[in-house]
Image (tube, rainbow, N blue to C red):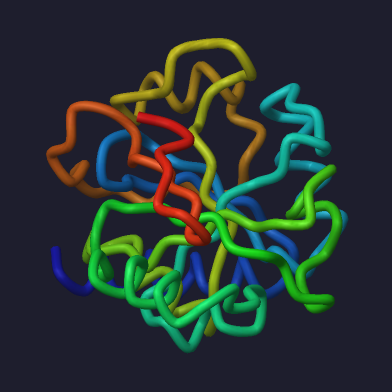
Length: 187
């Protein structure tokens, strides 16, 4: 069984690097993700979700180094706030760098990022070799998927791979905070 799991992770990494869209478990819900630098993959993901690109997307990573190219530091205090919660189930909004594509930041000059503590999601980032898009596997406005079957139905099987695994045990999607001031943007 461990070999099968490792093979799925390796396949997921290859798919991400070649423009694929995958579904996988996160801290609280099933997520859908892709390479944030691949505009066609992101557009495909947004179409699956019927989501407006202007809202922006969250990026997850297995390490701080994987998100550093996407974020500017507003202050040392902002950095301390975020890194005190990472790896963990806290998403922080930072000013976006020029490396962060507009199809990720949307209509904002910021980007939401998380260094995940979910072991499978972190391994997916490592297999890919960087941060990946992480948004809930549901159509815009619908409840997030809390099972693989709900993700399949929500996204109408239009993704390339569903990576099996367990959710991280949270009862709701991660909290989102503004790194500049610590204010909660989503509970």
